[in-house]
Length: 341
Image 1 (cartoon, rainbow, N blue to C red):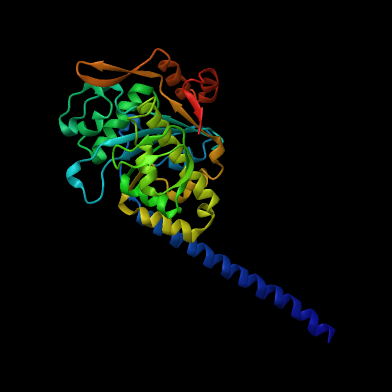
Image 2: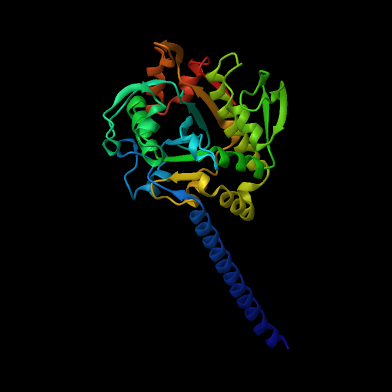
């Protein structure tokens, strides 16, 4: 009897071991299936110009784990589904610089009316000019070419290179917020929308996708005009990130699956060949409370009858801080241009 029991335990452990292996294999296969599903749901394209790319093709694995700061270019396009006649422009331009530990990020908004030198773009027979930076998107032909020329313009202006880029249109932004069940944002200056006529009263509230997008685009009727709009764009990004974490989206494969698939063609990515799963894994330590906003030192002015934004004398110090990954030090010395979100 004892002998038979002694023979039984190894068989039980062997059976459990085999079962665990099968479960692990199934889980791995399921994860691979989900990863492939994510990749197929998101549009991929070459958004960064060669002069703006900080990582050579095929080196994506090294930059994700390099321990150096990363720069991502985020563009909000004003293209709307069902309204192609309205054209497409870079309505929002934000550079996200992550620290080497991937635990904190600065969101640097670029004024769309900022006057900058736009380099030539042979693909569209554009030979370069000095004008509003938003025009780079147009001179590049919109779409992929527009983002490439905009990235080249920013790289030349700021003296930095990018590790990745993303473009999302208005419909995609609304979908994100609605999928999250709305986001909580706090209105600091009462404003009436010039787009819909809706009044946004003072105080914190839950915004739907349409409301969040509408509020974040307001610049008229606000004390600081477009500078307030830039700050509200940054707050919206943080609100989306914070809500996704609190709702468990980041930890639930089914929610992630629904979330990414719903974006569909609204989101276009350039990660230099890195998979979406690898990028999300690299950013797993980032938390909303460690996201800060930065405004480019500048001032509004007029060139003829055209309203523009011009760089102020403090701007070169910001660009140097971005080049040397010392934005935290710069922000501490320049609180008038840096703010919590």
